Length: 392
Image (cartoon, rainbow, N blue to C red; front, side, top):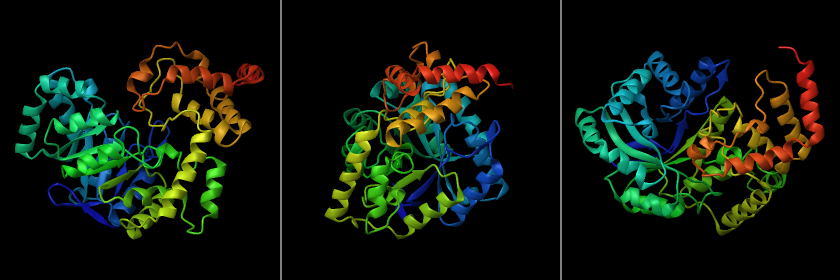
């Protein structure tokens, strides 16, 4: 494993463990499987673990695993204040103390203001006394580093970056999002201030790997370097010295092993002009086929009407990145064979999902388009027939 420095000159593994996508079993996290994967990563040098208050069961799972293996002092814990839920000064302590309890710790190494999208969200927290609260927690040692995770445009990112002496920040960044959200402009601005940058969505919710169009997969398979799709994406990031740590939502041992292998032998500035040109070619193939820029993060959930929005958009994109039959077939199974139907036609256009989407997608419009594409009249008829004779 390779390491890069944070603001306090501590060594952070360039591969971080994103704990949002732990494997699930029944209604909860598959703790046994997750423990094997997480501990393998820790044993092989991964020392940065990223979770959040709103990731279902994640903080509790991380706390139990670290306590059971007595390795809290071997890792840096990063979690996030759900700032969008904060209405009072007292709420700051309420949520923070709950997080300490879940994580079975008395301090957080890297604490983030979760999902800031503009200066207004940060200003609201300032009016509630967040700056004084942070100072108290830092002086007590309960918070070691203070940062923010960001989803918004680059200009707004720069304003937030300049408004407080942050210890680090977290942005969505990958070769598909090089010039969107905070983008390269934000990455370079943070680096100029010596602010470490943690990267989320390095594989764009799977769009740079398994959900890549077949034409893109073919290009990568035939490239003489024989790097995997994930390897191209990770090496593109680690090629940049301004990137401190890249989070990966690993949920299989094979994934952990591959990512550790890549993180152990990549180099800064290893990309050639030909490599960059190849990435541009792959980007063109991806952009030609993708219909909805959904990363599958799930922030739009739960839908009041029970619609599984990320999965529906995944099926919609699959119609064009793979084939129509594949996408429609998967959607048919998900909708028709579930006891609680999650059909896109149940959308009441309340807009709740759009208010939480980090990508600022026009979800209601995409739902209409996706429903039309995924369920032509004969598919809707099939759904009705299947549900009529299905027994639960």
